[in-house]
Amino acid sequence: MLYERVFKPLLFRLEPERAHEAVTTMLKLAQGVPGAPLLFDRFAAEPQANLSVKAFGLDFPNPIGLAAGFDKNCRMSRVLPALGFGFLELGSVTLRPQRGNARPRVFRLAGQEGIINRLGFPGAGAAACAKRLSRAGKSPVPVGINLGLNADCPPERAPQEYAEAFKIMEPYGDYFVVNVSSPNTEGLRELQERRKMEKILAAVRVENKAGKPVLIKISPDVSDAALFALVDAAKSQASGIVAGNTTVCRPGLPMSLGDIRGGLSGRPLRALSTELVRKIFRLSQGQVPVVAAGGVFSGGDALEKIRAGACLVQMYTGLVYRGPGAPRAALRELSALLAQNKFSSVSAAVGSGA
Image 1 (tube, rainbow, N blue to C red):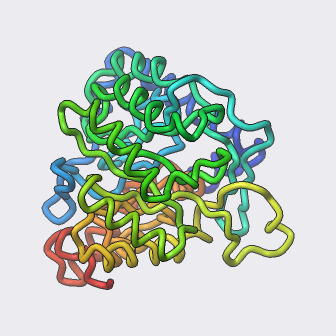
Image 2 (image 1 turned 90 degrees about the vertical axis):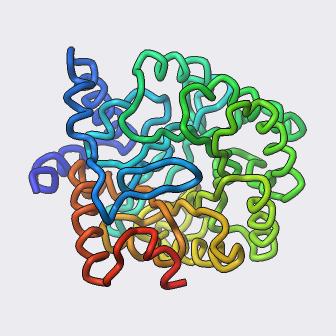
Image 3 (image 1 turned 180 degrees about the horizontal axis):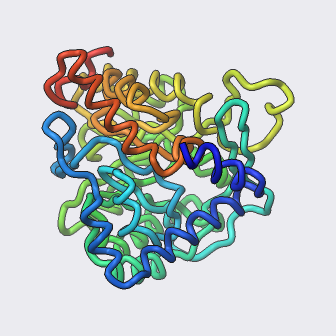
């Protein structure tokens, strides 16, 4: 309530990327206070009987995680779990540092509770991110590392560069996500073609000595034929699918907003994302774990995606519009909804509405 009445109006007066920088600066400062990591760990999500999840060999205290994009440079891995998240996905991390696309590159759609971004993977690069995570120490919740591709990487070198970034980041991630679906790096989505995707996964597998889970993040705009091939490949060569990235479609937006170039996230993406989850669950017959992202603002939104076939869900734009209390509020609602619908656990609800 305080966020809605006081902080949100102040933040929304700022250009969106500046507002994000202000928030992350405050979180980083809080994390740097002596003794803060131990205090944050005490406030991290406690496992609840009907919310704990086991997926791709990892234990999650709850199914609501932070989506990639919020902590691109891996600076806040100790403070973010205190918001209630059951896991974090950091990045996207590219092999080399890069500036990303020119500003302005983030656009707030307040009336629709959406965001359009064309960031283009700005970041400090894998070496700097690895150094930060080494200093931060172990997070109280599982940490995923989302791997992106530098804009200047030739397509034929993509497998090698993903593998090199993975090798640098491997000690610091509990799971990894190969991001081949951002619409803001030219040619990246073409790597969703099955043979190209398999080459990337094979290259990463060579460096994955510890056998850590490796997922692929796909686009909600992928064709049914391409989706069938990706799901089939994921069954044998990946640990799961993150469904999905932002969309270049403009569902439900007025024409005045339709020409803003970039990927759309938030409330307008919700239905498209849920349908993608449902398709993957059906195509894989529930054999491929799905992490759902897109339009998660509440416990009801989370349950919708879980019933469509997701074992875990992620929040980002919902955090922007609902504030730091959003994860815990969503968890309380989700726990109550599971009980009301006679589901003993998250796992019992997965795919029940597919």
